[in-house]
Image (cartoon, rainbow, N blue to C red; front, side):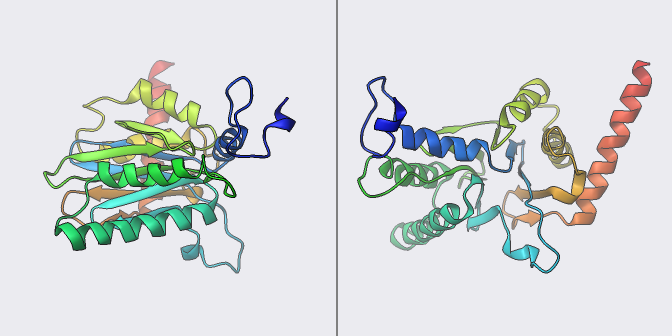
Length: 246
């Protein structure tokens, strides 16, 4: 049945499916994992890094991007699609500030990104963006925010969320372990995000990138050494917990 209806983005199948949109979501489900965790005064993004070849500059392979001084985005899906969407969002952030003399809110820029993604699901001659985004930032009143968008153009706010391959496993871990106590300070929030990623990333700290955003401070990308320190602490805590259970 799908062969008759998956060639045009604007045509519904008789059972109500837009197959090109579903294919875009499948591209997200096969992409490297991204996770976001909102703490009390901090927001953490963690991504599963794509391994780079020996002669490639790893700085040119990024899955975490700044949109404005106070807003950051991570994505799962097609990198080229993400680059286009990120550039358009950056221009909108600057245009908003130029016209209204105020920085954009996280809700506004998330709606803008989702609106672009939705337009590409009902226009002829185009295809949906094959990415899902996690947008984080602080509103002008200092409130931390975490949003997700998907290829269909829907968006929603979260306390913690994951997207990409094995997102269900990571989400189940977060549902089980997320609490106000576990996100009471910066270190606990970072550890929770890393623990969630380590549920699905086998090679440990080598393939993990962590970004930390704090109120009125520039985005911090943790160095490989810091990430390795956190991984060792998490592994030591696990071993101690297993020993106490025996």
